[in-house]
Image (cartoon, rainbow, N blue to C red; front, top):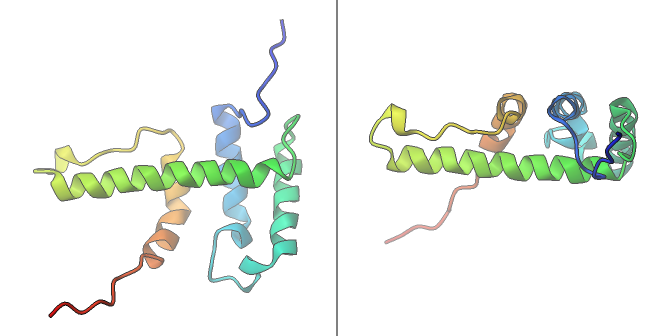
Length: 125
């Protein structure tokens, strides 16, 4: 008996495939690229990714939604790691991300996230 999939439901293999395709389209995540703010270039990347995913009911408009969900989860996991480093008494106490796709995103997003951290310019007297 065939089961219907939710419009945004991807199995683990397809989530990793999406991450790989996302990584290859730097225009979607590399803020240092001149094309990063080019809406047409980004839309073309979404279209290409959806075609390469070759999943029913997963079109170009679904790609940015799924990427946003992955990035949100990624940042939540990063925050847990950072928070646990501040409060952990030893290396064994540092939080280790539990989502299977974390490392696949961290490989290329970590440098981008680290370079975009903001620092306060307030001077306290």
